[in-house]
Image (cartoon, rainbow, N blue to C red; front, side, top):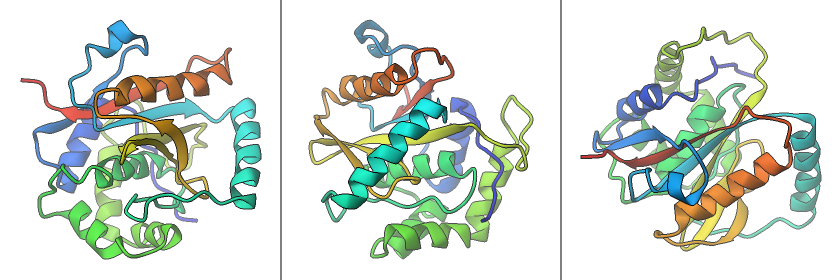
Length: 227
């Protein structure tokens, strides 16, 4: 398995990354400092995606295995145009969460660049094939590796990583969790443009509730740049 240097949950670095990929400068990544209603009001609107970074603890892994068994026994249906890809690159979950976030918001009009080219090349492929295409994309790999060195902590591709990124998006009025380690998207119920951030916060709280002794959770959002 190919191994990338892990990406830090750093809004400044991730904003630079998405701009390098071809996302217009009017969009950026921001911290979500709290999941209560009054804290969510500080997040610029409209929120296009929420990305959760969480520890891969024993309670989480137990829940993930149980969930995967159910998914494989009864594969869920999801929209054909919901972009979902599998993670076949170790430590690529940050990049994949960003791709999931951007690809499922078609009103974010991409400039010519790496991400637009990748999405056009993979739009008719399977989730596994999309993962393999990313693995073989040397230009995408190069940008990830360069950006991963710009965080506040020393990045080491050989260091074991205990955290994982997932993306939450609104697709046709349904809130989906997109995780390249899982066999399919996970539907979390109805949502809307107006309630998406609050609904995504509830899903983040569910992750935290499974691991009440753990504090190493980070939530960020893809939003318009504040005036």
